[in-house]
Length: 419
Image 1 (cartoon, rainbow, N blue to C red):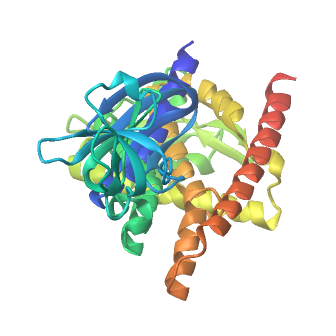
Image 2: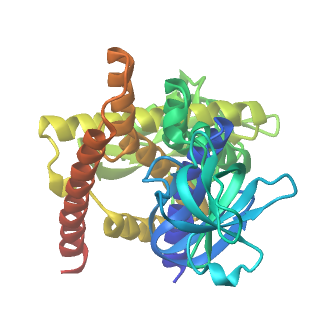
């Protein structure tokens, strides 16, 4: 159960920050955001605040921000339709009732001559029960359409995604992956603030209960001055001397409480990939510093970003195959393993996953953020956008292929871990 909770919290946080990036920059651009959703499928929680409905859906495998203009916008109001209008004190329509008009006795029933609820915000028609004279009704910019009792706010064209500048649209899409890198950075900084950052001082950190260092009489906080007469100035020097001398007694000259001591220690031999090394069961020194914690956070983010790109490169060159990929099942299994190592390892795992999600979404694959950014790049080069229907078809095909890949990867994970 603890693994299930950890998986949901981690995956939920990754999706939340990703979609929050889209939401923040879309709203900054003035785009009407209809829904901010975590998960897919049926709604299990819904709360509307201002213009946006915040929902949690049943399947925790992603999320989305539904921006006005991204999908077919509204029901088209055609000439001859009978609609109900509720007007404010200035005579502007605040509600446009498409059916079940009898539930709104205060509404004025209008037979539509023409209607534009995106650009002109104007409805022309004949009011039922009044003299047959064409009347004009301005539409409030925040008016709602009412159909089957459900209200949907209209989106004037200047509040739709397509109306914004190329830069604003690019930032609204790029902000999702960007926030995954921000989340990873915050996680790594938090780990460093709580746990401390590695130091290069030649000072012994914590000692393991079964290591030869503790058995020989070394203590946490001992300052290593030399080993076998060789001067030691950094922690790296300590590690190298120990690793190079398995099963060989080493004379440690250390300083403890102002006193210089000489303590013999024999590193235990351990078999690793590439040969044998010596270990004495001691951790490196750490220090707690806000400035160094921030630096550590940036360095970890950079190092893991570089590492993930290197692994992607191996996938392209064929060094890795599709069997090396993991989906939700594989991530769950890895989370279970990492969770047993402690909260800090789990936090670090979340940071790595966040970077991975950010990078994957930036790849120029249709249906992902990177695919959309690729279309924006083409638009910048040719000076005009690609036909929306053609772009939509490319994204649809890309999404279908991604779902197929997800099924294959998930089946491989199930076979690897459970069959």
